[in-house]
Figure 1 (cartoon, rainbow, N blue to C red):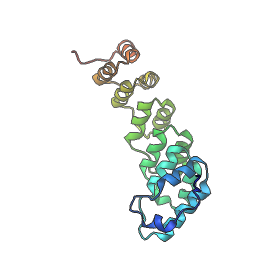
Figure 2: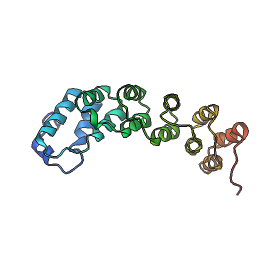
Figure 3: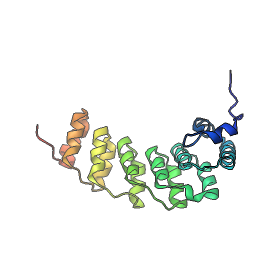
Length: 196
């Protein structure tokens, strides 16, 4: 049986106690680029709901999936709903288009989470962007995080960007059996480590 997602009982949505009701339906629409339906559900829910709850969840979801149209709609209709977490999510999921759009249109910036996730998952282009526009300062914890995840190219970029590293980098890489990372840190970065 195929469920028609466009037939949604909005009265049930307005009574839901979750932070945003039926978010799985919105995810489905976002994934299928059905922005008009997201807009309609969202506006109808707000009209019927006496309590307005956490629209930042939708913004975070939209930015993590790279849905600029949803971000634009919120920017035009509800600009105060943006938070630094929205930009964090775009960076965490390597959504460069969303990151650039947010940079241009909203002034909340991001938190340290953006650079930390980019380091963890090896998103060098995101790190370049964050450093270029001063959203994040290069710091040793980024190399430590990249080393733990075995992100050699990220470590190379951070080293070339003159980011120092702590003893944790080699310790973390060794504990996760990332031998190429350990070798690079020892030879090129001349990093220290904790003797066993």
